[in-house]
Length: 388
Image (cartoon, rainbow, N blue to C red; front, side, top):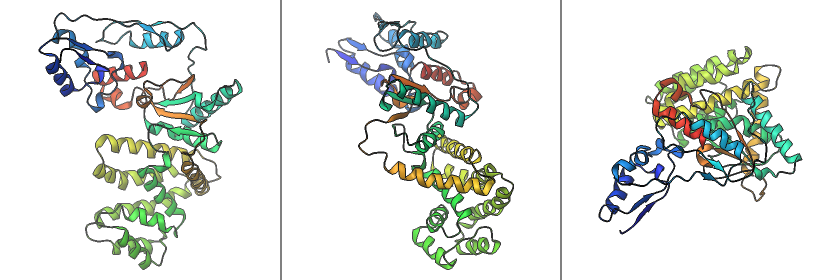
């Protein structure tokens, strides 16, 4: 090839960089367009070294900096420039706005927890609608998908339509459905669907086996009764017994936790004794960890809900879930005017007149793995994510 042009060069992986170098080797006419500040996909193979080392790989390389920004207002660029000022490895540049200094400055809200944050976002959406903005003019962005649970539930309760571009709705996720089946069965011994879903998590148990167990148990499973727990244990095969035992232990303790109004401990037992091991068998370490975060967020939602005691609070939550699940099913209808919920990764390149960034707190963004391990590369990527 006489000329080679590579766009979004900061997102190339090792193989792609080698490949384009080979294509351009003969005529040595290669142009790489990219921004080292926007390299946020190393978790899926992108290597920032490709763009940083490009001048040394191609002696005589000319660098052209495109520092005029046509998209953002000056107050947004001021924050972006400060965020990257201390990045250790960079092509130094300062974004200069073309747009006039109109619009509000970015505002930082300090809130107590995820529920308070969701309520603040709801208030902001209300204020913007009064000023004439459409719901589709607004986006809620977050570092990780689990952070959207509070927001999804709050918007759904207030009948504010939203679209999720960063994954499925909270109650459509496999691990959330599994956890809810466990919680439903605690309160509803005759919930056949929840029973089937839960026992199918046991090794060697399929749909037909679950149906047979249900029939042999008399079409109910009252986990508060030792007799029912022992009967279920006797019905599962040898392969499932080592996994079934800790699940039954969760049920045994759950009713005491209900009486003590300790709903968080019900979910904690379920994860610690049974479900975390299941996740680790089925998913990668990172996926399993992210799914556990979702479940913890779910537990916080239940614990902070309305009700005079633990049993009532759990019952009210499950009733809400039934309502919200119906709304999830209608989410893909033709209504255009919806708030967008998205991870920052998914939203890269898009723009909205009004944006909320949730969870700007150490341990969330930057995420706790980067903070805990103090890995230089990981922390630098968190910095770039904030810039984007």
